[in-house]
Image (cartoon, rainbow, N blue to C red; front, side, top):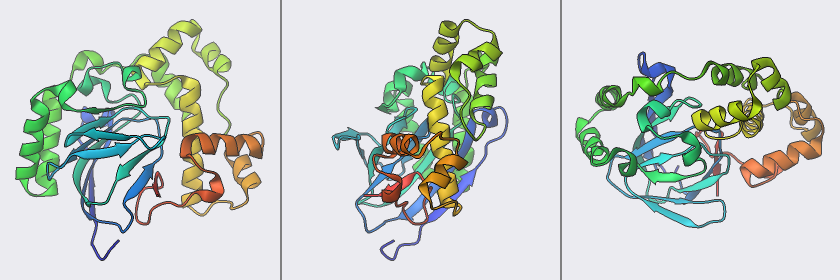
Length: 275
């Protein structure tokens, strides 16, 4: 941590925002000795605002730099990407629930899959105005209240109602263990498979099969963080993989490294890995 003190606050907004948002977060003083962190995918959307007004530099899975403004949207990802931590962090963000960003971004989430965008492209001048207001607010609590009020203004009720088939599928696919076969899933839903696929991709940002694989991958990270089985075969079995090679292949696809090479950053979410 380079001698710095990291302060992290979180806040769960009230309804109706709480139906779409997992939490607001606020981070100050994060200045690690390493210059980059790999961010592992979880299939959700993240909105990040640098309170200093600094530009955000990200790197895709091939190491190519992505130069963005101070307020950005990280679309629903199924690929890892890296963030620049060399200059420290002073930021506020929104972690949306799966499919929860649509009423605020007003864009089909499949168009944002594995993409990073300046928030200004979606919100216009309001994105920079929000950043300036948040920077001036001063305290995390004041910033949370301001962010909540601004999101309520942007809340599009017409896009807030998720299709019941997608809500039902998300509940089933979030259950731990071996993912439900998509044919079985569509059979339970009783909808034309092609129509269901289009609905799910538009509302969540990716196919149900890929989303199910990501949720299982996140279950693996949760077990690793909690001190779960160190043996690869035991870990694979605990997370519903039919064999260890399948487990390793999936882990490498989402983490860019093998399970034995996974080293989460200290004091961070298990999705953050030191580079």
